[in-house]
Length: 294
Image (cartoon, rainbow, N blue to C red; front, side, top):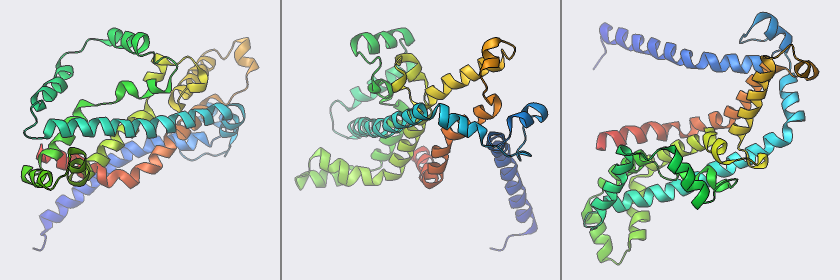
């Protein structure tokens, strides 16, 4: 059917809103990127701008010469936690969601109730911290960076909704042919929920990549700092120097304070921004399908 003038105006109006909305989020990123390549004196004198009048790599040179080893160490820890943590979370989430969705499994309701309880009742941060440090001994362990976040209940329910769409007759037919639960999970349920699983894996990966809270709670060894927490400590030190420009210590340390903060931000978010466009199509489909079928 041919679109009339009213439809064309509506579509143009929606595109205009989308463009404005996108610009609202892209503008700060361009500011951060532009300032990171700007000379420190220009930033101090004229403020932030997208296009640098005086191009400079001083911030990046300072980071990779003075902090290069620790930044690389932080990258390795973050990549390890993101990859291993996401894989472990997907195993736990997938198996729990499968067990909670199988019809005829006598403990299915128990699993669902156990999953609901933490959503309503929370013991608080102190018991959680004592449990992980005193009984699980996770202090200064890489496991501390992903074990406390192994299972997100919202993702369990989202994945359970995907699994619930599989007709039980298919699983029964597979059992008659001799298939076990592991075979049924891998050959029937996971292919059906593949889009949702990619979406959930992306959520887990993003949360591990951006997390610094667990490191702040459990890490005292700087060699085990993930990138986000290490940069958090660097930014805190830079803020301290910025707020104490007149002191002898701040005068003795020559650091491009403002541009270094922006360069650190670019280094932190750069890799995940490059990966995100390749997974974005799964992200949209996974959330929409999960919501409709839930």
